[in-house]
Amino acid sequence: MATVSRSLVGRSWWILMAFGVIAIVFGLIAVFKPLVAIAALTWIMGIMALAEGITTLVTAATYRGAGKGWLIFYGAFSVLFGLVAIFDPLSMASALLILVGIWLVIAGIYRLMLGLKIRRSAPGEGWTVLSGVLALLLGILLVASPLSGLVVTAIWIGVVALVYGIIQVIAALRVKKAFSGAL
Image (cartoon, rainbow, N blue to C red; front, top):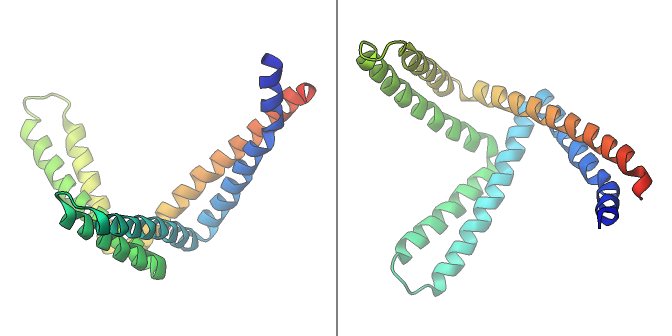
């Protein structure tokens, strides 16, 4: 049994390599062409939303239970969201980032007020105040310049993808070397 496992692992090193190469290619695109990467990710999200929306509407057509209206609403909203994401991915990504920015502004104000309120009764509670200030600043930046936020987000995603890809390639080479005798 152990020999079969070793053989399977040894023969599958190329899967790790493929994941690694794909991640590296995506990472390079995200770092050097961040808007292309964001558009691609948003487009993929749009396809998933469109597929889910269509599936939900098809289900709603034959559904006879309670909540059918919500099912139709969700399906229609998913189709609309998906179509906008597919046909105008950068605008959709910018709109989503603006919503995140608004949420961060609200969260920042809340954390700032909470931190100031409890700082006397909780020593060292300046961290909540600091997190509130940082959330508030980041939120304002995202609302004021969503395109810059998209670029920075894409670059960070790209760096993470590059690191992941390099680790996968190294793992693939090590697995291939370690299990080459088990083939």
